[in-house]
Length: 134
Image 1: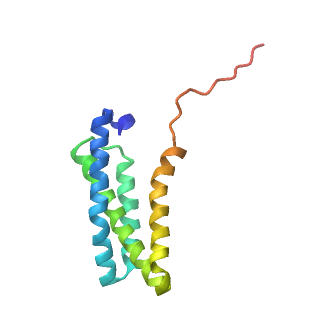
Image 2 (image 1 turned 90 degrees about the vertical axis):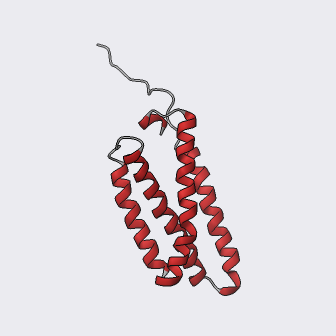
Image 3 (image 1 turned 180 degrees about the vertical axis):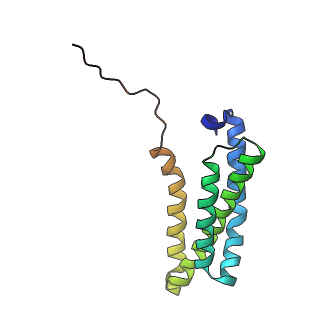
């Protein structure tokens, strides 16, 4: 947000919070829909939708309406998929282990959000260039 769209930290943080809120709202909806039509269909639809919207986001549309709508749609698809995944885990896990397994899946998702930030740190220095002299 800061590097691509030139937003300040507060502006970028506000938009990131909006993304998170959209994903959180969509998660239980994904679970409800998964209970009705099956988690595989919800997860497949979520992944397909997220892939299409990711391509749109990669076009670096103008900020606000175009990019903002794209990011909110991406968050909604990802949230729906998360709800579908939890429904799928509950369907596949042995009944006596559903709590443990969904707890582990949730923890891995939470850690993934933090570890991604640590592992994808932007480069702060330019690589040195090697030149040969005659």
